[in-house]
Image (cartoon, rainbow, N blue to C red; front, side, top):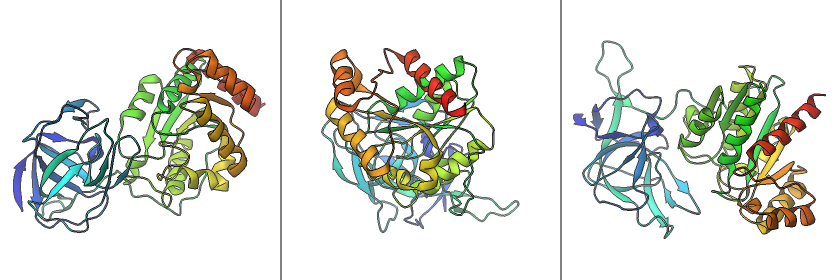
Length: 351
């Protein structure tokens, strides 16, 4: 056990109340969610920021000592990497996302360049036993995921956003819907159920007017999977339902065909029955057709509206209407119309 001074603490450690002076151990459990300290070994001009526990974005530089969490990532437009089997101080790892997930990089998208290489310093220790200097490995989350939780949304309607891929406009649409429903006098809660740890999206929904927000990492999960996605979604919706908002906005991160658990969530009968309105976010008309086909054929879900880059102009909107018999409403240029459409559907369901 030794003392270190840390320059940056990633947002994945949001609930750990860490300070810049920490104690680390050379004994490193290679388990998802364990917090470790690393020293950055290179500089980058692209994808070179880290989301801090404050929510601010900070530029990372060579020599910075950073706290992040061990985990994996499978991103189409970023880094893909796995959890190491064994680690010791001095080993090299990579920073896999701007939320502070750390692992071994297997593949990098050319748009983001090579990842930050980092030297492992040790496991971050917490000291939960009052009056004793017994340190235990610090882990992500404020609670542990309860897979046996009784699912109950408390009758609160749920607006879900599913996308054809990452960066298909889900968060932008969620924020417009949250903001408009709030303007219409509704109390709105919001959550993100799948993806890789990063608080930016739920912070944006808070800024848009969500009175309560939560994300999967609150339950100690760094990266969601087919195995934990349904349990996380039930926990998030149940927790927000207990607060009695008028509506819950649920963002399903990544895409319908991704590896973060969206398919398993939509296949869960209890969760599917709890979804009042489903919004499809698509990058182009072809992906809108594919996304709608998957929702209809595999899950018997009829999307209420299509948004995202596929609706950036009238050409896409017309193609969606002709091919899918669905309305296309762009969240960025027609956010009020999108929110009003959702509000009308919610009112119809309640009536």
